[in-house]
Length: 290
Image (tube, rainbow, N blue to C red; front, side, top):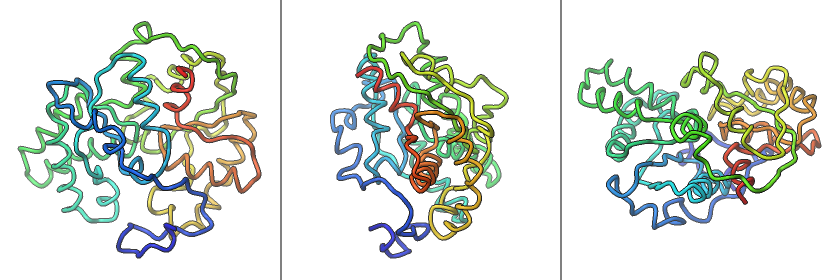
């Protein structure tokens, strides 16, 4: 279906041969109206879930909310738009800044902001420099304040909540899990210079065994909208080593914070006839809660 949409509706045309999940039947805020209605005086945590969560039927958001409910966190789903990063990458700078200003205003009142998307986190962090470059002092400071309380779920769970304060996980998964580290994690979150909270998070899953993968931090070859559509033929070449390394790890599941990387690896594994699943870390932790 997406491959037949007019180009003006998407940043790039998506080829029919690419494996994609089903389209979502409703938006995130429509699925959880009780959380969409919560203000910053009623919830400490704002969840910035990103565009793909409204577009595709994936259990990432549902998983985070399930984890939050098991642990009695008050989570809000404030009004939000695209983080702007894909628009900025394609040179639509004014639209990128417009979207960023809207989101910053919607999120600024909350004590914590959690986002599972490395590209969104990277985009928010870049806005500090972007607004400084164009002389917008007001939003430079607003963006700086937002970044100080912006977390990926692994960092939030391990460093803010603390593993000792989590409710017990009651279900054993009994799976070998290997980890892919996305480029925007390295760029936006400087994972190579800080503790890798993802591996620590996976250690919380009963029965889960994290296995190493060669080239875990090498690019999957997608590069966001560039590879999602019109450069699909090049992504097939660029991902060859990544898919080979995933399969050689002998894992049951490959996981990554980046949904785009998951799509790329899921596509490549399916075309190789592999039974290895590509699942988000939040999905795995949520399964452990049942």
